[in-house]
Image 1 (cartoon, rainbow, N blue to C red):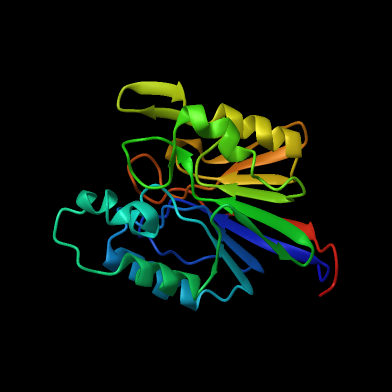
Image 2 (tube, rainbow, N blue to C red; image 1 turned 90 degrees about the vertical axis):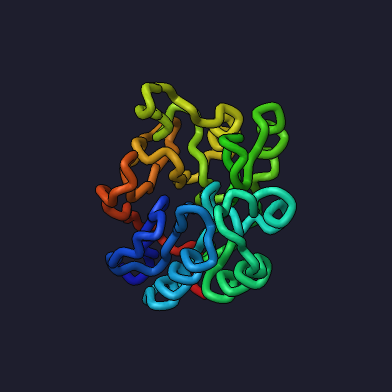
Length: 234
């Protein structure tokens, strides 16, 4: 419909740059690379350039380590097994030139406010990590009038069940869930836990884990699509 926006939502593509359905707004919830290597990131940027969406919204994930430029040179660079002499800031700027890149901030599209963050609970000391004790304060910065919240990591009990490596456990962020339920956006989009793909609902909020790959890092899920009416004509 002319007064609606069609959102196409994906996460955890991990270097699989797949064909996408048509829409107005593409949202990628992070982990577009396997380990943030320069070649992986450039491949994603080239793929992103070709996508015919009017708006392309991207956050990074814990695997996209070169995007965490505050920590890359001092700590995260050692994750790369060979000598890396590229400029992470320059690589990040190339990504920003081809999308709306969100780091704890929002964008308004046709009156719809979308707030995004690449952060998730601490795991293996990769990129964009929050210590559990800092989680409540961290998520208090989510803007209260957000219509869509985009994070890399899941909230507790929604798309967060790990069933791998002999572990079966809900690993989502309890403080993130509390904040989302306080704000009550229409949608909370995320990824990170590959086994958690799908849609759940609580207190009128739709929670969507958009991970395209499964726990074996093979593409097994489809992009998730929804529509929202524009709040204003721009």
